[in-house]
Each structure stands twice: as structure tokens, then as C-alpha cells.
Length: 134
Image 1 (cartoon, rainbow, N blue to C red):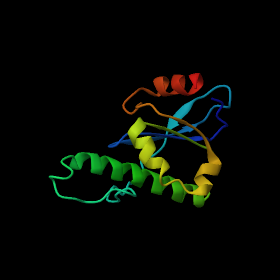
Image 2 (cartoon, rainbow, N blue to C red):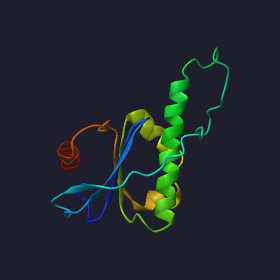
Image 3 (cartoon, rainbow, N blue to C red):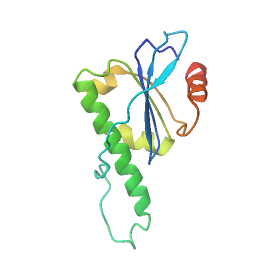
Image 4 (cartoon, rainbow, N blue to C red):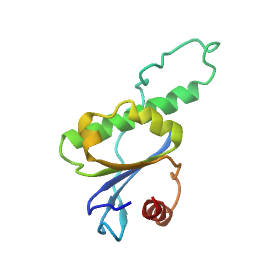
């Protein structure tokens, strides 16, 4: 995957988000960590409802889905504010599915690509390799 300079890369799962920026060029990816953003994980994704523990015993899954929605809200806001011009999202498959539900059309317009892999906790080098291989 070719990444223009200053492309933002969001690496997420249901509990953690890391943001990087490509300081290299399209052919030589060089990621630099960006400051962490505050994520509002209180949102429940569309279609999900708070329900009794008998109907949905996995409250942690709702929390993870809410975190994915919160990431999308933050990314939408940054795109709409003009802070993100190019974006790549790398997320665990379920988290990526939840995030997609909330993409604003402007976010979709700046989205260069997605990888459905859980790379949170991996080294910057491993993330760069995954991007170069995509």
C-alpha cells in the first residue's frame, strides 16, 4: 500500500488505539507515533442495545463495540476539522466492522485503505511491514 507523506494510520482493537503518521513518502513508509486521543467509549453501536445479562451475557463485547464507535467518532471529527487528509485504519476484524458503521462520507473520501488485522501492541516496524505488504 502506498502511503503519501503525513498519512495518519489508526491501529485499533476493542480496547486500545494507537495513532501514527507517515513521515516517509509513498514508497518508504516511516511511521512516527502521534499523541493519544481521548476516546468516548460510552456510545453503543447502532443495532446494539443495553439489555439484561440473560439476553447478552457479554458486556465486555458491548464495551469493545462502544470503543470502536468512539474511535470512529474521533476520526470523523478530525477529518471534518481538516486535521486528517489521508487515513489508513488497521483494526481487529470485529472492531473494523463496528467502526465502518459510523464512517462519515468525508472519512470515506480520505480513507486510503483498511487492514483487518489486530496489530495493537506490535512494534512500529511490524506495522510498517504490514502496510508495505498490503
